[in-house]
Image (cartoon, rainbow, N blue to C red; front, side, top):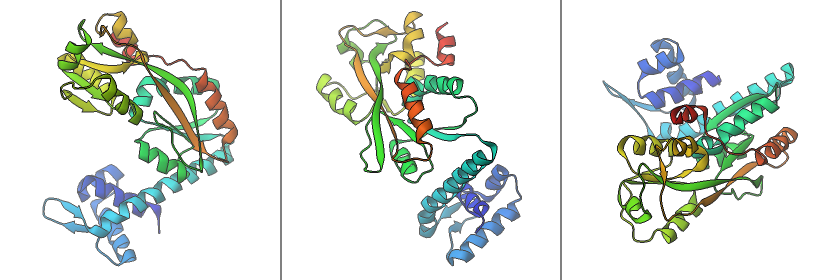
Amino acid sequence: MDVKVFRTFLTVARQRHFGRAANDLYITQAAVSARIKQLESFFDTPLFVRDRNAIKLTSAGERLVSYAEVMVNTLEQAKLELASESHKTIQLAIAGTPNIWDAFLQHGLNRIIDEFPGYGLNAQAMGREQINNALLERTLDLGLLFDPMKSDDLICREVATLDLLLVATQALEVDLAMAQRYVYIDWGTRFASEHGQRHPNIPAPFLRTSTARIALDLILEKGGAAYMPYSLVKPLLESQQLYVVTGTQVWQRPVYMSYRKGASSIEAIERIEALLRVTDPASTFTLQQLGN
C-alpha cells in the first residue's frame, strides 16, 4: 500500500472535507476520493460517513488514524535516514513541549546549528505523551520535557534548570497578583503539586494554559500575572513592561532530555546533550525585539 494513500486519509480526517484535503495535497478531489476508496477496499470497511456538507470518521476510521500516523511518520523518518546515508549528512529529530521551546530549546537549537554544521535537523513541538511515543517508535531521536520519562528503553537525564518568576504587568504584592487575572501555566506535574503548597486557597486562575507564549501575550494585552521563566521575560523586565511580584522567590524547574538506549545516532545525541548542559537559557530574538 502506497504511503500516499495513508497521508491522504490523514489529511481528509483532519480537514473533514475532500475538497480542502485536495487543496492541501495539491491533487484533484477525484484523486482524493480514489485513494480513500482504495483504502476502504483494502480494509473492506467504510472509513468515512459522507454527509452533504461534511464528512465524519467511522469507528473503523477513528481506529485507523493512530496506525496511519505511525506508518507515515516511520516511513518519513526512514526516508530521511536513508537520504542522510547517501549524502553523508547526519539527520536528527528533536522535539520539546511548547514551553521548553519558548524558555530554553530555541536558544539551544541556535547553538546546535552553530556548533554542528552539516547536520540535518527536524525540530518539532509535541506534547509529553507524543514525545514518549515517538521516541519508542523510533521516529524521534531526542526529546526535552519538564518531567522525567520512566521507561526501560529510554535514557533520561537533567540537562538544565530554568528559573521561574512570578511576574505581573504592574508592581504588586503576591496576594493581589494571585487574585487579579492570574494565569496558570502548566510547567509539569511536580510544579502542579508544589503550586498548591505555595499558594493554597487562592481564587481560580483567570486562565489555564500549557503554553507560556499564550499567557505572555494575554497579560501584556489585558494585564495580569503568571509564572514565567526569566529567560523568556528578561527583556520585558528590563523595559519595565513586566515586574517581579513582591514577596516571591525564584522557582527552579529542571529540564530533562530523553533518548533511546543504543540509538543509531548516539554519538551525536551525547554531543548535543553536553552542549545543552552548558547552554544558558536566553530570550528568543522576537522577544528581544519586543523588549527593545
